[in-house]
Length: 378
Ligand SMILES: Cc1cc2nc3c(=O)[nH]c(=O)nc-3n(C[C@H](O)[C@H](O)[C@H](O)COP(=O)(O)OP(=O)(O)OC[C@H]3O[C@@H](n4cnc5c(N)ncnc54)[C@H](O)[C@@H]3O)c2cc1C
Image: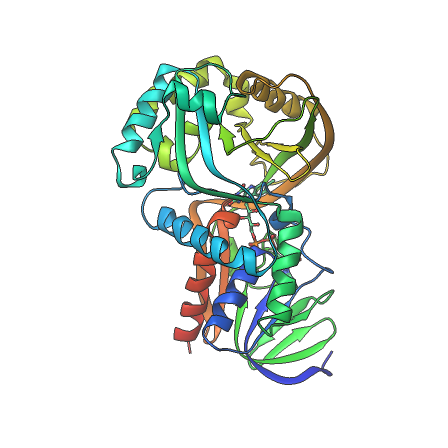
């Protein structure tokens, strides 16, 4: 379709209205550029709204990726109040259920990533996390934020449109790019630069380039539960399985003993990629998850045995009585050995994908990188 969708010529057209696309749009408007976002659906309905809204710093892969998370966390803190996004709670409590997890936490605290983190005293635990079961102790990180992603993404898009002058073309698919033309299902846009943030769509634009990531589509089980007794969660909660899973902890040599132990005593959880994240919403309900099926199948069928493993871990960690499950859903993200992928297939075009399931935590920093890269590519 060659009719014009707009008479404007944009400095940057962003393909994809997930967190990575919105973060790229924000990075571009901060540079004074004119920006449009093209989104296939009426608004994102994929990973960016299906996640925990858990902006995680401690546990991200050491080095550049941890720094991306720390920077993105600061951008979330700055943007959230302006965009009317509530931060539901801050920080992270990790219940160390076994001595081997304590060894990992102590090793982590000695690294540069451990700055401002600490092990809580028993009286601090009684004070701030009385709802955790007794374990070896509790590791505390102050950096994390939690936003309600299913509404935050819409609010962020609305704020970018109303306050930052970004144009949105929703229910519009980008079908090909030959700059200055960006061809869409509803007409042609004109752009100096184009940033493609396709989420899990590795087949529509630059499929051969995206295939070089060797990413597999990873499917996760998630639930919302309502505690029978009301309580306030003061920080996100994780457990030993997370120390063994999150690169920032799990890649420390001290984590080997914990991983070996859990492979033995929680083999089903380890095989299903189950670990525990608990976050709370404004109405008191909790989002809990998750699991990781790397089979690349993206099947819509939810295996309830996986939910049972997640719930079992939840009850091992949380001392809040019974909960009712009120929602189940699946989410998908691309997963590869490298935690992000960015490449410029041609002058003026950049393709970017978070391939480590951490886009809520690292998207704002990654968006800045994509904009720098696309401006340098031409
Ligand atoms: C269940 C689950 C839990 C998670 N938990 C966390 C967490 O707690 N913390 C964290 O940091 N990360 C988490 N993640 C990962 C995080 O959600 C993702 O890394 C992030 O949302 C990816 O954002 P994105 O913008 O790349 O992709 P997406 O959210 O998939 O968005 C891509 C968008 O691009 C659009 N699009 C694609 N191609 C086109 C085209 N040709 N034309 C127009 N539009 C197009 C799609 O419609 C879609 O809206 C989780 C992921 C899942 C699935």
